[in-house]
Image 1 (cartoon, rainbow over the protein chains, first blue to last red):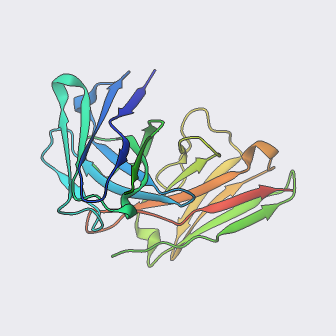
Image 2 (cartoon, rainbow over the protein chains, first blue to last red):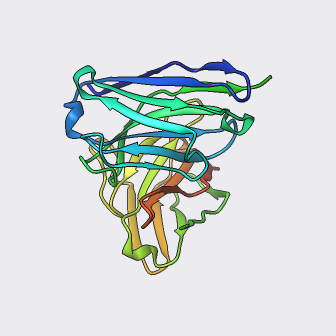
Image 3 (cartoon, chains in turn cyan, yellow):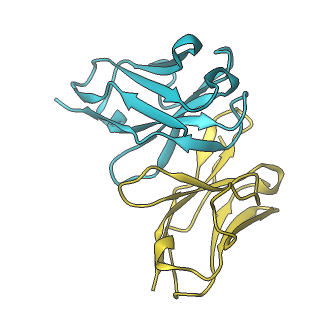
Amino acid sequence: EVQLVESGGGLVQPGRSLRLSCVVSGFTFDDYAMHWVRQAPGKGLEWVSGIGWNGRDIGYADSVKGRFTISRDNAKNSLYMQLNALTTEDTALYYCVKDSGSGRYGHLDYWGQGILVTVSS
Amino acid sequence: SYEVTQPLSLSVALGQTASITCGGSNIGSKNVHWYQQKPGQAPVLVIYRDRHRPSGIPERFSGSNSGNAATLTISRAQAGDEADYYCHVWDTSTAGVFGGGTTLTVL
């Protein structure tokens, strides 16, 4: 059974940082690209960032470029997202999502349950 | 950057057919994927690459894509189909793009 479990969320002040983690199981992690997708309260889905199977092909949404950094550790079956210079607009439920392929342009076939990040003073 | 548009809401009578559109410039040249999200739950893939159903998704769910619109069709709509539905494509700039979501109500 495929499982994606996020952690690291919480309440943080504007301008501060946070690191999200996602541990996966049930599939060969280093065969697949991975993504972070977020959803602000009461809003729609927003793709945040994606990373290819080997960590070399990386992309970001314009809204987070220069502030967020995605990474992965294939030995630990883990995906990460470093969130810096947070603003209230970054408040959202962050989903760890598996791509259907090794490159990061497939469909998103498995989603975690999400981890809440709240940015507030 | 590429944009896709969906109707904000759609109502369908129980047992009838619902068609949710996803509009975008020449979207027919892209692969379109669809996700269903029920309240308090993570999204679930229901259609990928325009028309393919993942295992476990009922045959009542189908998709098409041509020209400037992709369509998710739900036949014989059931109460359990009430959810938000999102279309998804990849922009040529390699960014992921989601539609704004359509809330489906089954009357």
